Length: 94
Image 1 (cartoon, one colour):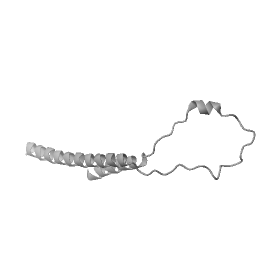
Image 2 (cartoon, one colour):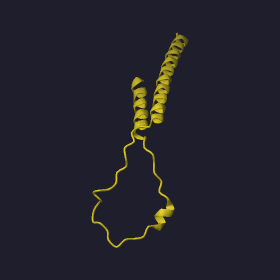
Image 3 (cartoon, helix red, strand yellow):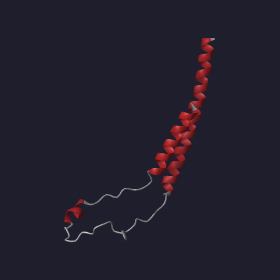
Image 4 (cartoon, rainbow, N blue to C red):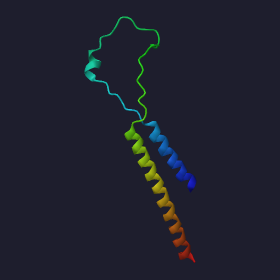
């Protein structure tokens, strides 16, 4: 039982930490205005511009903390209810 709760917690945390970037949409007007060039480089551009690493936004960090606390509280309530259910079922049988 604890293995499944732990696995769910790990999957949620892994998903939360992997989806921290912001997507950049391209403007269709600029894409249509691009003219073809005569020369094409044979390989990838070695000096391609890099996006600056902004790190994790403080708002995102706060949301992750709130989500983690909510997950722990959910696990505690689930565990308590399971214990109560098992106790009730055992009393009903006996």
